Length: 306
Image 1 (spheres, rainbow, N blue to C red):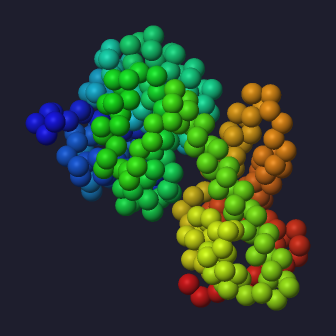
Image 2: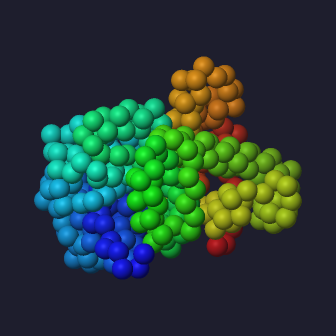
């Protein structure tokens, strides 16, 4: 209803994704309280974008109707919400909602939800897909899970400024399960395309022409359509998603399969490939992963013009 007062949003985490997402919330007219482990980042956000800096996580929780975490992983989210000496749940009122938008382990999310429920706080998981450019645009895809109907409604109601689509995935933890499985498929497609391009290039095919053909054929993927020409073939390696994060998400997917006593050989193989590349190229963008295959074969593609 247009006349309803917007909830106060507590936003924890102002990294490459969290900053633009929180910015959209401020620009949409929400009263946003921000907290980052680097106080200077919080101060810069408030100075450049708006919102109010929370001095502590407890103070952020006390001031907020909905607390959002956008952090590196589920352990960081749990520390911020309940485990840390200073945590948001110390201040949150009974009936408040927490939303973990980080890429977290599904089983850990279920455990966190049970711990918060004892304090009268409902948890939803709402990881995102689309990378930094979709975050900047406010056009992320959001996978929303949770077991409390009112909390799900409250969570979905605030997501418009950040997203182009919100899909309810099922019970608590299902959003995080869907996120890691989606990124596993993305990693598969990127890895297979890396191999195909190098095999074709050695035979004499032009990699740029290969991508043109793939993109009008059955082998196309988001990787070939949005990343290969601007980021991989130019060797800019700037698609905006860290190798470490892709490695983590593939590992979470493997852990989910293992926890369910499932034997997934491709997933196991891919987990090792991405772990090895991440260890060899710390700090890299995931679009640089073609170097894994180049280094194994003693070959290197010549860069194309962007």
